[in-house]
Image (cartoon, rainbow over all chains, first blue to last red; front, side, top):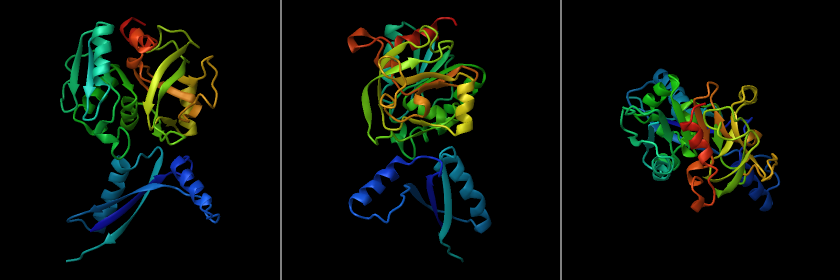
Amino acid sequence: MKVRILVSFKDSVLDPQGQTVKNALHTLGYQAVQDVRQGKVFEIDLAGVDLAGAEKIIPEISDKVLANPIIEKFTWQIIEDERP
Amino acid sequence: MKFGVVVFPGSNCDFDTYHVLSDVIHQPTVWLWHKDRDLRGVDAVVLPGGFSYGDYLRSGAIARFSPLMPKVREFADKGGLVIGICNGFQVLLELGLLPGAMLRNKNLKFLCQHVSIRIDNSQTRFSHRGTKGQVLRVPIAHFDGNYYAPPETLKEIEDNGQVVFRYCDPEGRLTEESNVNGSLHNIAGLMNKRGNIMGMMPHPERASEAILGSEDGRIVFGSLISGF
């Protein structure tokens, strides 16, 4: 099973990199862009794990390692699910 | 007082720190390798600056899983003195030994320059050799030094007097301009509630000898070795 995890800053935390990207897009004339939040993407291969297992493991590793819960949040989805 | 300087892969202020502790303030000092599981009987642990594990994932995030870190936590829990400088501060935040987190500097630049910092609390194990309001000249060198804590945590930190140093102008005023990295409340150095763990982004070990332009950093090391 392949899982994609997206880590980004919480809404309450200022994201200076996202702000800078937004300003660059405005400079290029994309005035429709209202906001940009930058984040990190992790693609993780899991072996021998069913959906219930992934639902246990992914939030654990996201909270413990991939994201810093003080400033970041995460979402995740299954992108490949090989059933035997 | 016996000091231990922790060495991670990517530490680069470890030798400077060791030099100041052993040759400038003349204290017995040992290396503590990150893979060790023994603190070798030290009285104080120093987490030096650098780029542990290449700053992969987040600054300090991987160093936190080093085999030595549970020993450091145990030592700190018993009231042992721990000081984290720059990357060491980031490691202490990731370990949860100090509250809050670091964001990228507000101007998105790696900042390498001398700054002024003000002693905000001189009744601490890390600053009692100085006086409240005293302005120190100490260098910084970091990308992620923009201190953040949620409002309720920040209030607690302030109410408990945990802020040891704040970025200021040369006259000691807390201005927006002098707050070079954008830290909340101009926070440059912070201790835990109990007062035995401190992290600071400025490098006192780079300002402990006249030949380097400032000796103000010795207030930190001098405070550590003299009774409080």
